[in-house]
Length: 79
Image (cartoon, rainbow, N blue to C red; front, side):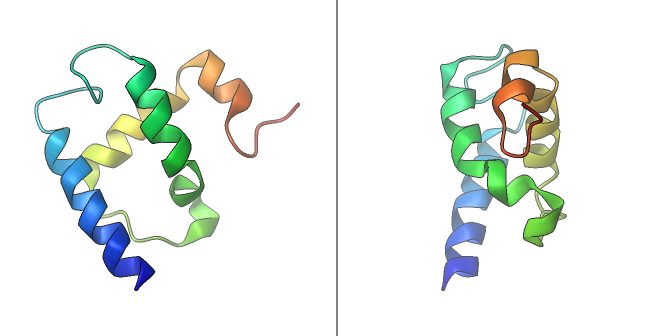
């Protein structure tokens, strides 16, 4: 089931972000863009994926969205 798989991997990422601002520590790297590109559609409010149990993922993705280069290219960005 897709939801079970989502929760399985979201738990891993949420736990990994404990004590970190970004995937590899305290600064934005290519790893954040790689993981973020796979997460972008899930993070859209229209996806209706339950993220309330994953506060670190929500905070990490909010920081990613603050990056101007990400904001210009993310799904749903105005061209």
